[in-house]
Length: 538
Ligand code: ADP
View (cartoon, rainbow, N blue to C red):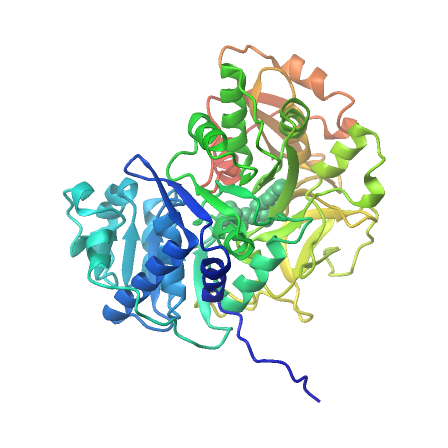
């Protein structure tokens, strides 16, 4: 027997409708690409999103068409995002930090029809345009006054394009499983792969992301999503924040410490989210200028491991709660967050930090487990490491235009991460399966050595790779970038590590380099380091 409840499809446009009706006056504040701060309300935003939808329809765009954006987090990007999705087209967010060949591959693979591009990225797109046959219009996210001279064919300023259309338009209606968004993983191995979100997965993920132990946003919050919409959907904030009626402060192109601080202070931001590098920049700026963060309550840090120093400094010196998060593009992206449970409230401070530094526990609608190489489930004892598998309604079941099956027979997706899970449900990543160092039949966590090493005075960044070893199979090499002006030595670093990691994990050597290569999403490029140190002998 079926239940007798309304058939109400979970479509993302219902989020912006809800915000415009119930939080009509709530603001979105944007540091515009042109410079000045711009303000609108959720009511305005919906009106403009409807105009985008109408204008797209006028261009002949319909269900399933891919429309690309290469844009910072701004009001215009959000209205374009809802405008595209609201007619059943697919918003393909492009990461401008990808290499030119990757962008070419991605745009052509997606067969994007129109590209919305921020002023900042016009030169990147100009260099590619000759090889993008599917794109028939370039809409530059600015007005006529700021329109650059461009070689882009069929280019138009966004405001002029929009001017021809009013908001007298109704969203399309369709099945909730219709595709809504497309985001390619950076593809550290092989070609980038397209993750195709649906309306249903996005709506559910917006709710998942807003559970109290995840972002927990309310209509009182002022949230600064620093994590870009092109990096795994700004961790669902463009759905969670309007659904909650939280004020959104959009940072535009300003990710440096000074720009971030200015918005945090001027707009009295209470919650924010970004990768560790952004917080590092902010902390440096605060220290240099002797500033505090009186309004900020909590920050979510993820995308890469949050260093202990960062968590302690933010919590102790600035009174900001740090929520460590883990996830991936394929998971929409939130997988876990590390808020403490009731059972941990009376732990000593150091132990609380130990627990919060793990990658966190699964919210409702994310299932996870660890298995060994044979696929057998491993115990949740906080010690045994295995392959981390996940399952849920906002997790990929396949890649766009790829035949390969990516789920096992029970529907689990292998994240490619190696992790342990403790009895309380906290998961801790110990490595990527391709980065783990196999030494004498045991696994050494490159990540744990890196995280410990960055705590040593004078160390700016650390990376660990496995070097082939005749007796042990592999042994760890620690690669260090010194802080400017520091002369920290191999001996200093090894002495610092002594006692903090298992003795058999001790790197066999330390090398100093000027810069560690990063991927487009800010992760250490271990492949590049392995090439750079190919043939290395201890
Ligand atoms: P890509 O950078 O390849 O596009 P994602 O942005 O989806 O991929 O990154 C997903 C991966 O990033 C995870 O599988 C994990 O290895 C790593 N990651 C994400 N968050 C954390 C974290 N808090 N700690 C450690 N690793 C993390």
